[in-house]
Image (cartoon, rainbow, N blue to C red; front, side):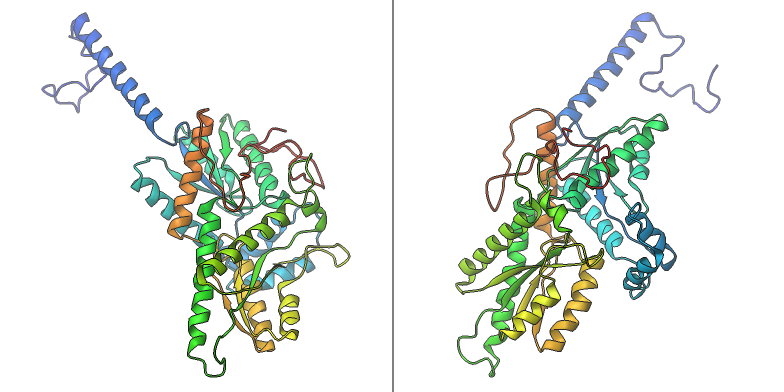
Length: 420
């Protein structure tokens, strides 16, 4: 049948044989199509992100309105038996900000920054968005990819460190989303980049940001008549999310000593402090503290709490503090409430001068590091040799998690991107 909207004088589309064409003409067209497909395949293989067809920014999620707060918190705490009365207390943190967490908007900004960096490097790979606990869910992102014929995906998580809640739980949710898609008749293969606490894109960016904050405090004090000559450097207080002691004890591979989560933070805090000293030529003291504790008082969690530590510093006469949230990628609720609200109020009560350092967010150096991590993982997937830059130390975390790494202490679940 002829196409009534096609002008007979126009040449046939590539790959569509003209019924009146000779066998030689048809063979010529077929050869042309095969050549085009081979050329396209070669271009794909030359892409530094091959074999991945899309990147999925994988994050925790957060409510985007008051009506989403309680459903979000129930998903986060599912299976733990936490009553709604306790969740309502946590919900108040969100209601103070209109019921909206800043995390999704920050992740959208990060996605745009990653896309821009990919475009700059001429890497034509789309970036999708999938959350563990709020829309758009991971399964939604995988479903979107599958609908476009993309079945080989790479996850970049917004969590840099190693423990159950910041690594294996993400892997569990990736596996659950894969199973959901498989039940719909779509199979997607997902890898992830390594935990990047000591990839320079994250660690060196934090060092630069903290160094500039200390420099800012030192310069601000030069004109302070009350400070006197030789003003001391501010006290550095690093902050990360607290965990149950049991989760920290089991963080890391099953055949190692554990406590990998707290060790990583301790090492990075010390390395950043050494960098500040070397760059600015000043003596500066530092401590590692924790925030966002939850759970029953009877359950031991990592300490000291940042507010308790500020009080302890004040009792020692410390009045100038730089607060560095190295445990977080962006200024989400744990930062804007626990630090910018509660810790800031504590510092004010104590008469402290407190400067909170920005998170890495969409810092250019951090974004470039994420793309470097994606290219690194793609090189590994192609079974090619690749350099794995680290700072501090010389021990990068594996992109394929080792057996028994950061176990789920409540219930064993399937987990993607691992060897167990």
